[in-house]
Length: 488
Ligand code: PHE
Image (tube, rainbow, N blue to C red; front, side):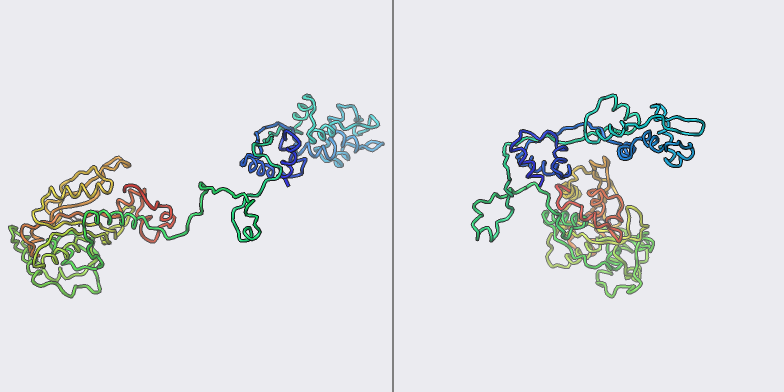
């Protein structure tokens, strides 16, 4: 065994000068010996130094001459006593050996050429080339002139050996104890546990990755945002209805019936069931009136409001439909109480699908309903909410929503992308929306919405939404995504 050989040799010798020679002398491969050396060095049982040595080795051509003789000698030996024709000799030797051999043999004056006949000029020859090649192959040193000669003939080539020289290390032993990795019942029964040396724990060792379920990035970001809402005292709204009536999705939000968003090019309408079964009649009347004639200080839109249009079922285009239902419910309480509501759930829009758009996405929605709220409150809450998401540089741009006034688009400066990116939309719900519900006049609602996909794509560096959501998602993205990140 290689280890025994090394340790045994070093017991009576100072040094193993060359691991290659040593490997050859004990009959093990150098790679095997190298592994043993590394392990012994790790435990300081031996000291090793890397050494390099140049050696000459035979090329394939050199090897064949060392085995079969040099071409000139092969040439000489192939000539019978009576001589032979060039053509016959060439057939006997093959063209290559014939060509090389004839030149060298002629130069040595071993052979004569008489017209076509080749004859021997001397009785016997010595194969110096073959002998030299054999000596070099055996590791013997030869004079430079010979080396240069053989190198020129491409019979030898230089090879750099990398090996080690070895000496005893500080913890040298003749035979090392195998460190125990386990304390077994047998050790205890035999009592040999007292003499065992235990292998130390390697606390830096890489462990096998655990095969468990992984959270999809959208779920991770959703949870982080949900926690922010909960920390800010928000309650979750029930969003478990993808199907909504136009009434709650649009009409109750003071969105006129001829608004382009209510077109089938923008909204998915249901064929079955095509219409809703019931709506709160009193409230429907009030909504109809505010659309047609206004009230509460508003002129309304002045058109003929149609119940058929309001009854049409659709896939909700925003979770603001849920906010509306919740506010209506709140307005039905005998005593008003302020509320903070949030939701994160799916919405649907009939959009052309591309790298950044799908026909469905997740909307994050927050609202606060209280007496005397102002735009200043909205700005303050947005600063608080977005800074908890790691977006503390915000800008606001005036915008338009049928149901909010004023309305603001929210932009955040993205340090990584080095630009302002739109992160959401916000506003104060209009009196035309809140007062028909029956909320007290001094109650205001500030609200904002954003998509879950957009911040997730920015955070995870995903530039195609189809890599994040839908049938083409690569499970590796989910496995690779970190379990926890600092900041969002
Ligand atoms: N419903 C809006 C949208 O779909 C978001 C929003 C919510 C805007 C609340 C203002 C207030 O973009």
